[in-house]
Image (tube, rainbow, N blue to C red; front, side):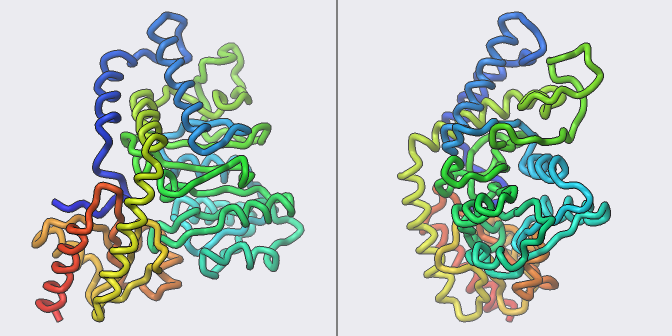
Length: 374
């Protein structure tokens, strides 16, 4: 099997992550923040330490980390916890449904939404003409999960600071692959997934929140604090983390991020070389419609002539043992922009463990499919 679906979830986890999960299952199953005995205290300590690991990795010294079960929940927490009727928000056509669907729901409740149709790399140039007196928030993905295009989140962050706008970054695809310095960017919120480029188990994500930011809870329930009070506590992070935390996934995330921190430059170089090679080889195929650019970050979208993208993905899987994803990738507006809303697109998403040899086999497979079906 050749696995090219890392934008959905990374398949290979570092051995350090596997080892710590095995250890944690045996030693850290007490509930953190709920009891005073030693096992609960030990679990609470390692969860606290993992928050600090995340803050250090993203250079987020002026931020708090709130645990969620995935990036979707983190984005929902930031969006529904901030916007209200009468507010205006600006976003892009590259966004995932984790952003678009909450905004669609809020439109029904009186929130105005503007969607920029420019290239992701030019968002910062177009923002000024769409700001209104009631504009409250800007939301952008850092890296497109369809094309691999990258947003200049530093320039967007500077614009938002200058115009006193709240900035939410969807870091699902970028985390672990590009440098993110939140203290420098100054974004108010950064949402991330653990199971993609940060190499954790599934079941954990997070929202990194700038200190003193006000946010309404998404969930209400037990926090282990102010138990005598029937009103949800307002302290962060506990007041935004109702219910038992995903303890083992959080611990696995800490191990994944520590592995990245120690090997980041090496991994980044491997990915850069692989991205360049992949773009070069895909570009040679005259029958291929390639929607990603030369500087794509680990993600390449394409179609074979007019073939249905799902058919191509199935053929790659069944006849060649290659795992990819096809369709709209939960990001319909960028497919409208690309003209692929009916056909969808085949997506190859890479990680550092992939090789040029695997890419060569993908090229061979695509040629065989084209010859057989066209």
